[in-house]
Amino acid sequence: MTAAVYRGVVLLLWVVAVYSAVSCRGLFWDGASFLVNILDLGGFHDFYTARAHVDWVTQAPVIAAAWLGVRDLHLLSIVYSFGLFALPVGLYHLALARARHDPVMLAIVIVILATVYLPTSFFIVGEYNAAFAAVTAAMVIALTARRRNDAVLLCFLGLLCLRSYEALVYLGPLLAACILWSMRGQRDPAKRLLLAVAALAFVGAAIVSAVTIVDYWSHPHFAKVRSMSLEFWQNLQFSVPLAGLLICAVIGLVRPEMLRGRLPIAIIAITSAALLLTPWYRLLSDYSILYPPSHYLARQAAGLVLAGLLVCLWVHVAWRNAPPRVLTVLSETGVARRLVASTFVLFAAATIPDVALTRLWTGYLDRLAALVDRGDGIIPTRMLPLAEWPDKLFAQDWSLPALSAVVSRTPGRAYVIADKDYLSNPPFDPSCGTLPRLAGYQWGRGLP
Image 1 (cartoon, rainbow, N blue to C red):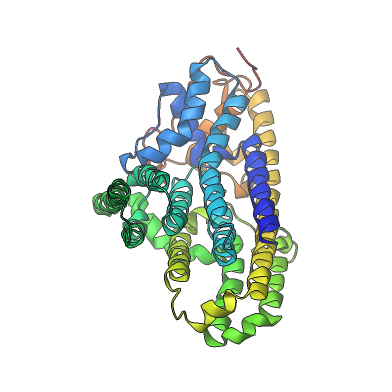
Image 2: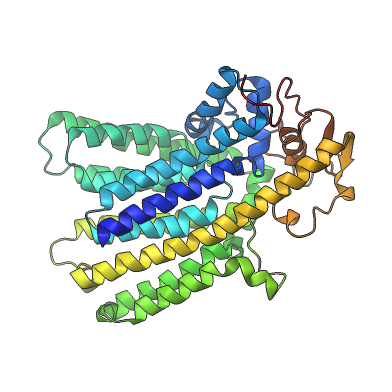
């Protein structure tokens, strides 16, 4: 059962990632502006040094493709999108592989995928996707480390996280503490040294994050982000599974013996059905929609949920002697088997709204491409149905010039421009929102 669930989750994870990459989802929101800057400037777009390590890894494939002479913007968009997806998905795959022999650990990692990764990954250009995946993989490796190579891998993950995302201000110390805890009883001096270096790297990540938060605390963009951080509930892909899992968690803590019954399975089944049907809620109410920008709103809450789940992983491994009743029950063969199976069902259900949004996204790109291919000059947004379904799910005013240029077969002939001065909603990076050049590039041009 556990082996089959592991293979099924990995397969679904990669299928969804490849489909998303082929659909050029890396262009969503900031992604189009970042790709334009990469191609126009001929190098990494690492304007935000506190997240530079993730940017270097995810942007390397598209930079290499451009350096090799690829000028097809469609192909480059796919390569760019795949780089953005491949890093977090590869790290989550690693975490699943290391946890697959422990049903409880495997179930917790699957829950992370269903409640943290999928509900926040439509905004895949956000560095937090890779940071959360790296932290998850690092925690599982620290808890299962047996060889010196594991310590080396933790060092690499620590280096990646050193400049990855501000959530490391609390995730970094958590990982450092777990790594130091894992050093007890280690007699190999080389391995102890490597683990200490890895722990130091995660502490350094927390320091970099803290300094960044202080430096940008009064920045208009950061102030706006803080004001919206409690609106995570608008993300149905996040709030629906979280609600169901919290109910099961309360049941397990208050009445652990109930985990042997059918109630938790029924709750997860209902939650999975509710999650699977989210793409069609708008048929009942115009306000009950899947909204890709809400992935951005939910990322901070998702980081806190991730921290809680990582603590659960640590407690599960560390509390082997006289564990609490809930851990004893969860470790029973029958309960563990049902736990793994139910989390797989939840994860499979979580992929449905993700795929549904991706299909709508491809339609949006096609309509935008048709508009700029037959247009000329500046096309103001007041002439477009961007506030109507489904285009309103994807339009972002200051990234429209870049996106309209990328999908055009004649870049530079027509741009979609929002009727705004960008003072109320400025791009975080001043170089974004400008008119791209993309000299020599074309959507559908083909290989050199």
